[in-house]
Image (cartoon, rainbow, N blue to C red; front, side, top):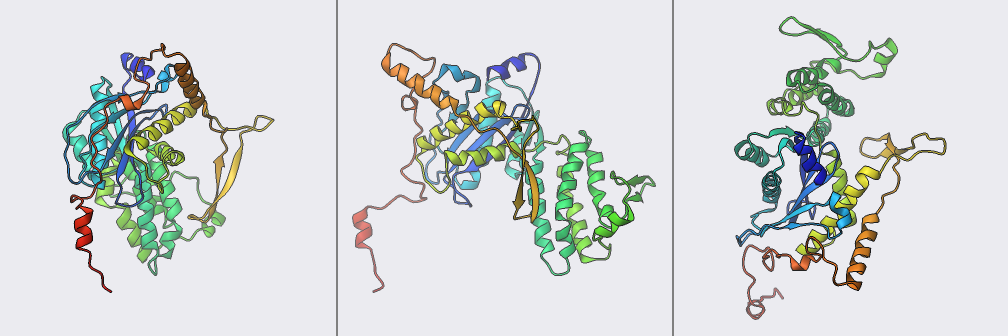
Length: 397
């Protein structure tokens, strides 16, 4: 955080990405972590923890929770604790985003670009409450949603060729966003060029008379014979055309020209399973502490963790078979994770236990911090007395 403030003094503005992670799969989650990550360094600078509450609206309590070890102030993570207010599981993510944005900007940090998914609730929050922050959409979520639509339409009889082109279409979306250099018109033009390429048409004339061509090298006769090309009158092409020229997608592409995505955040959410497995329940305080440990481990390793090399200095790779795409993919092999921060924390606790005169800049115990007022459960109606429930019990047999 200290480095971030120093960069702000030099006139550098923040480019952040944010995403939510619920404690259980599906649409019946009880808790949600919303995390904010720096785009350039991939450090996590803020996270929100919320709990669904269908009955009570309680007073907000604002505190900041930092790691008790002074040696790790360079990777401290601010966690904002609020009394629960989200009325449903789907309302937790936009609420966590809104509170996190206010907290970060309230600390004097200047956000220039904020990257999120294409949630309509977050769109509204950005438009109404943070109009001076440029809102970019996450390519990772957009490509994931488009792949599902292609696979759904490709499963229909007569559209098998559309499913065969799925990987190339998604790769084309990533390529167009990566090479547009911030120009939304170039992005949309390159994106729509896929409709010509799939028909083996690599040079064409636009409606305005301008001639365009694909960016790849001229295909040889052998290369052309290896591909299954679509016909414009086919059902597969008509379905692809409806997806590529979707009005909402074309409009949203204007907010993807900076090539921002939340892939590193998804990796962090996967790493959180070490501390917060979704198949196991935890108390609110337990989730808060475990989430804090996950942030500390991520921030410690994001700088140190490099790609592993062989004895001769060559980078190491591994081939993994992807069951979804039915293809082999190449992945980098990284050096193992380190958990040195845990040793530092344990040493700090033992030292403090042996010498009670040691004082820290912040409270060393989370129990000493104000605790959020939580209801006994998240049921929408109060729990009746057990005696009354037993008395009303009716059996079928």
